[in-house]
Image 1 (cartoon, rainbow, N blue to C red):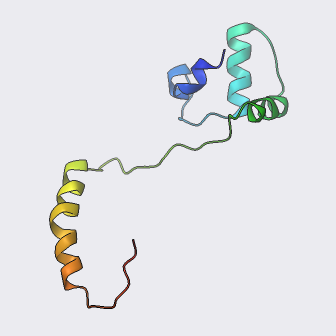
Image 2: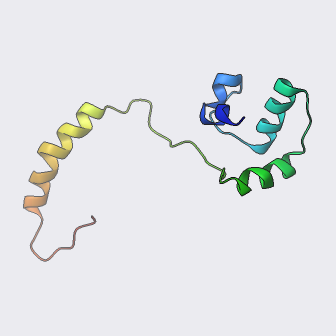
Length: 90
């Protein structure tokens, strides 16, 4: 029944990729003609391990190839210049 929850909400006509209990209630009503209160659905979903999630934010101009190149080439060079005894952040 909840297979569509694994799909992005935009695939079902919503403006953003964030599932909310209100959106689930709206989709259930549109699909099955049954009304559920969003508070009830939130509790019902959480009992089935569907917890509130927000989509990961990524910059639109993100360039995975440039990131990989920076990690492979620039980061080791920066690490070599780091004074000894200085803690790393990772």
